[in-house]
Length: 296
Image 1 (cartoon, helix red, strand yellow):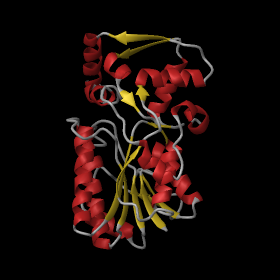
Image 2 (tube, helix red, strand yellow):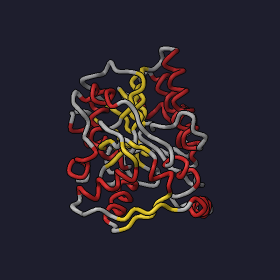
Image 3 (tube, one colour):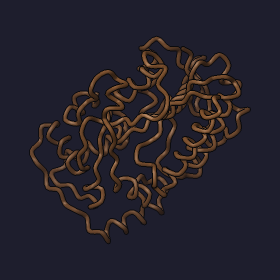
Image 4 (cartoon, one colour):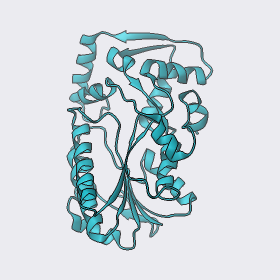
């Protein structure tokens, strides 16, 4: 297939690009408009401004499927979250419907239902438009909702690994207690390959989670054990300090830590592991094997 992959230079996008190419597909990878394409398979696209379908129609000529893997953690002037998560993906989906490109895979996120964060509301808006186009029989979308995605090259994964190496860890209570179901980035990529190959009939929403859930504190402890270290001191940040640190992060646009991050990381992020296992034809990587399987 000829696949248009947005966000191809990001953490998840790079892994998707490699997996889809290895599976024999021709992948047209989206790159920043500030980059110069190195070949005809690199396509400049601006998710901050390409918010109408006419921007996308020329890029869809000859394309069989679209995979959207673009995402940002928080709002910024250069990458406004409303445009990146909602307006531009909706324009892309509308263009797919007009161009007859029915197969669309959207990389979304688990835990966005019921959340009032900008991250969640903008992701939901893109999903809602996909469902509406599917109801009109214009698209055949699959939405993948992963829990915490782990792998080398991911900012959050690098943070977890750095924390795991420390002899003592100080974290907010809500983050320590929140339950997650980490998934290997390679399993997520394998799911996309299956959707566009062995299981092209799959449509709807798929929860992409590992086989077992645990608290974030336990996850960091497991990573530490996988690295060969003994138990660490785990300290719980007082609630008042948690709130102050998040508000300080709100004032620093470049900081990944802010009130929205606290709200997202302090919420359970778990799902049904059978969905991903059925798609992969095997059990997903267990969190106890993530360092060996995904930190490479």
